[in-house]
Length: 280
Image (cartoon, rainbow, N blue to C red; front, side, top):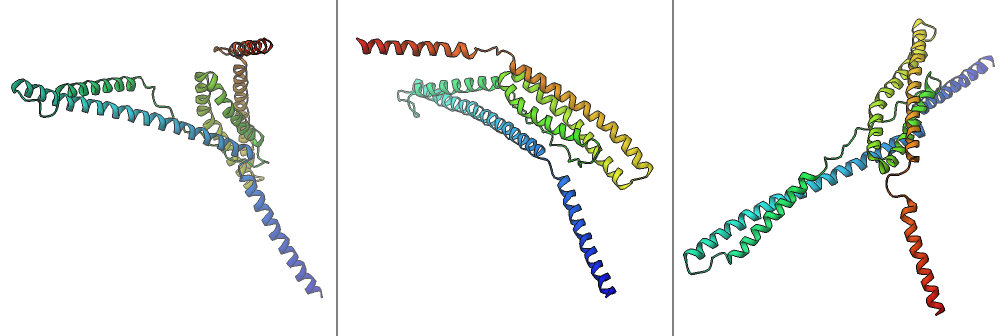
């Protein structure tokens, strides 16, 4: 009986061990899974990248169209001009009409082709430079919840998500300011993401080498990296606060009152005229 109980206890213990292994694996996989904010940031960056690529393709199509108009206009002008000259020579040296038709038709076609090529070339020179397609930094690596600096890493993701949602509004009001914000994020984000990567590595050292001198050194380094990451997050907060202030600033264009008041007055006058017409 004792052996049966011992065997049963071993089976139960083995089952519990396997269950704990499954739970640990599930927790580890969940910790490595991107957070909802990281997924939202990645989706926002994907949307912005797709929009930039569409703008670039529109610019490229317009460039190709103008280049084709220049090439076609030059070709038409050259061919029509040559045929017109031949007709003029034939008509001036013989009594018969030109073999290619009336010379004035070819001269008119040559002039039209030249005008088309000139206008297209001028428009091509006035085109703005192609829009940039920025290599938008992806969200930082997932940091385990019990790691030093996990709170700051989540804060960084939230701040970058907030800034990515503010930039389109700034673009509509002040394109130059929006471009500056986007450029600042593109330059600062990779450096801060590198700090997050260091926190992940240092956390692994602390977990795998607990009780050793390496753990103490990794803990000290993680605290220092966390402080630097917190400083970067504070700068992002100041950047978002400045953006909010810019959104509240008065627009240099016509205000809504200036735009809507004439329409309101016109509708009021129209309603007054209808009343007078009904009473007469």
